[in-house]
Image (cartoon, rainbow, N blue to C red; front, side, top):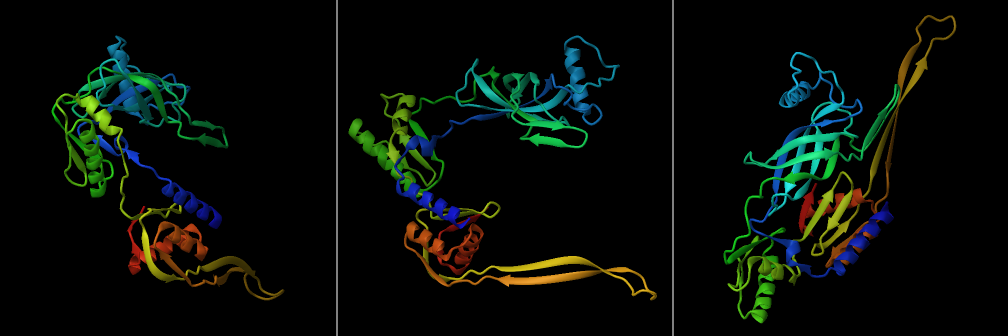
Length: 366
């Protein structure tokens, strides 16, 4: 475990040292250009006895009756006991500028007590946006990666068999809301807001437009956005394409992210630690409960009873006192590895350093 942690730190350090400039299109988006969420309710048919049970999922039976009514088949006075149908929720993401006739992927998830959607097909399902307008319709066979097999005494399940996906399964029926405006003002929004990054983007764009068009078009608004004034002789799409290919070096705040559940530690390249002395020892307390039978001697009066036998062992490993200082990331990683700890121990030390005021970074615990 210690070697694995050292390898992860070394790989992270190597990646930071070889980090190159990033394109503006990868760290910023155009304000107003976004995707839209779609959702719908539908039925999956053709299941091999793994669908919803009518008793536990009455809405499935009601949906089946409504669908057959629209097809001219009256089943109101009969009780459908089929297990080959399942009620599902269908979700999709409508990309920006999607037009009529284009296709998008959809995700299908079971709503009732169906055990598997494998082999099923989604019946024509309208997909609505937040404004309750229908923007697409979905239909087609599901691709399910998980499976569930059961017998009388054992059940085997792999993945999630009650969720599937249909590639290009929805047909767009209405154009996505919004369009690329022809206004001269364009606003770029940073994915990771930072003042230094916003200034760097504005400077890179101004240097480019000054050399190519003889004008300066960018101005940083705040840590989150940069305003651009499009030259009148360029289309908005061409202007955004040219700007998006420019490279900048994004700046990120000094931050340490810790996931205590998995023992994952991510340290930013600008994290610094004031000189501190660190000692970490692990205390292990083991409590063992055993049952001991006590019975009377031969020809003696008494009852045989069971008495508890408790054993407590306490172990504490020795801890070396080490000096850790971090003027840069490499020295910080070397100092932590010198202590020779597992990831959980490093997490405890980082939290203690933050409490002591020696960790000059934001500590994010997930």
